[in-house]
Amino acid sequence: MNSQKIPCATINPDASADSLEAKQPDVDNGTACYSKEGYFTTEYMAREWNKLWTDTWLIAGVISDIPKVGDYFLFDVGEESIIVTRTEDGVKAFYNVCSHRGAKLVWNERGSKKVFVCPFHSWSFHHTGELRRITDEDTFHPDVVNHRPGLSPLACEEHAGMVFVHMGDNPPSLLETIGLPEGYLEAYRIDQMKVVRHVRSEWGANWKVGVEAFYESYHLHAVHPETRGVMGDLNVQYDLYPNGASRMIVPLGQPSPRMNDQQTVNEGLQMMLQDAGIDPEGFDGTAADVRRAIQLAKRERSDRLGLEYERFEDGQLSDSWATGVFPNVQIGCHPEALFLMRFLPHETDPEKFYYDTMTLLLPADDPEYCPPGWMGLPENTDVSGQTRPDTEHYLVHEDAGLGMVLSQDAAFLPIVQKGMRSRGFKGQLWGEQEQRLRHFHVELERRLTGK
Ligand code: FES
Ligand SMILES: [Fe+2]
Image 1 (cartoon, protein in one colour):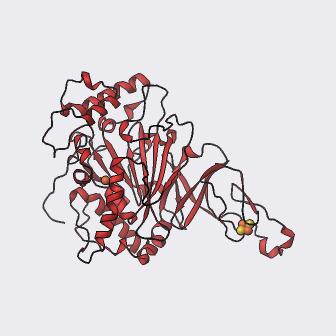
Image 2 (spheres, helix red, strand yellow):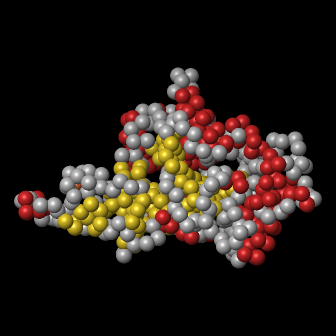
Image 3 (cartoon, protein in one colour):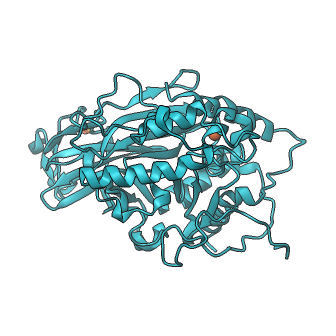
């Protein structure tokens, strides 16, 4: 790598080295320009399927979606559908396919069943995977069915309120693979969070274009200029962890350094103050004081409502800790709530992906505690956590109601996808604000080549 030290922000220079907030040591990921073929061809897509998707830990869903024995949800990725179900012996995962002639066994995305009955010839299976009954079994030669063909299991583990699955034969340790420090994800208590919105929308770009756009804040000023009033897009701390994991801390509650006006408490900042329980009318600081005021107000709220925010650094109370779990996840972490975003490959088309995003809230029994306005939940959203909403599905040209910022991304990424196809485009050139992208690609390359 070049010997020149390129500056990137450190949020809290006083953070101790073992704090989750600490700036991580630099990683030398080189300066190579990667081939652009990986974004268009079905050959590369097949290689990713064989070497990556079917041989890595993937976040299948969240534990709070299957609280009771018998509860299940489906996780669809590429050409596979996987049943994740809670049994008496813990959470288990099976391929969603009947062992008789391969029909898709379970069709509802979520439900509660202790027996799955195949819609083709009514073979039935216990939710623990064992074969329960073969229809007209006396018409089968015993040699055909004597092995009692049940459902095919795959590796399945829980961590920090999420369920991970692995399709490979010898899954490595999940915790080591994730690469984030112990306690990082656990602090958010995702196991107690409830899904209040779940959207799965199809976007017109390769899944990696999605990951890349969400792994940097470099494009905010250009694609999302409205965020400039409330996001310190140039003060972002980028951190790289083992095995392709990474995060960026985006300070919220402060204007972008790209703005001339660093004084006015603009409309966006006023909304953030309000979310933290501060009346903007009575706020006598400047824009530079807002972020700190939010942190103090949330500490005070925590003391009053017993939210136990002692487990968070000050910065976690105000900022976005956008955390990437390789290969396809970004979690926007906040004390009250999080966005669990998955970038899932299309079944057949390398130039499409599914942007699957769950909004999860940590319920608190108090009327003043509500989801932050910037989470962009539609007005009629039930935020009580009592009812798990159905997943909303949208095709490429449908408005998924994700709010302005995400609609801007959904509209822009196909333009990037198309542009990269040009004979005049030679491959992506990343700066230090895009170091997470390089880190992601180094790991991807390592997985695909097996080196
Ligand atoms: S394919 Fe399932 S019972 Fe025949
Ligand atoms: Fe964006």
